[in-house]
Length: 129
Ligand code: SF4
Image 1 (tube, rainbow, N blue to C red):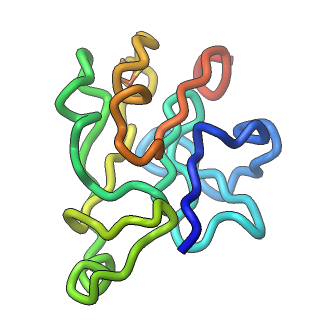
Image 2: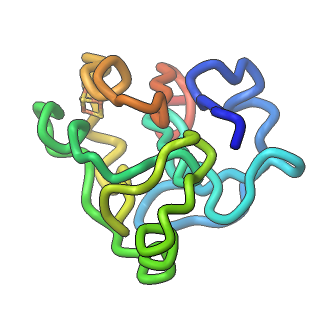
């Protein structure tokens, strides 16, 4: 499994088409890159195909942007120790969903501390455009 990081993807968000709306934020999906879930949020972007549910973003966010979104289908990856796009196996079956993306104050704590670089913070896009 090759390691992938959303923070290194210069094409996000501008070249990632919108797939759908979810809980007050967009979900974006790029053909040939996204595999199962795509990226939730645009200014606070969490690539669900990379997130391993370690929870540091939830712990460090000063304004409570994230909620845990349970994805039952991820249990199989945990049981079988199947890595996701981070190259690592999952710690839990939920993803950090930026439900309150609009509340972000761009401190970048989540982006800096995410151990698999599943988060990319971009000012002036999405709800801040
Ligand atoms: S950049 Fe800061 S305020 Fe914004 S979601 Fe991340 S931790 Fe929260």
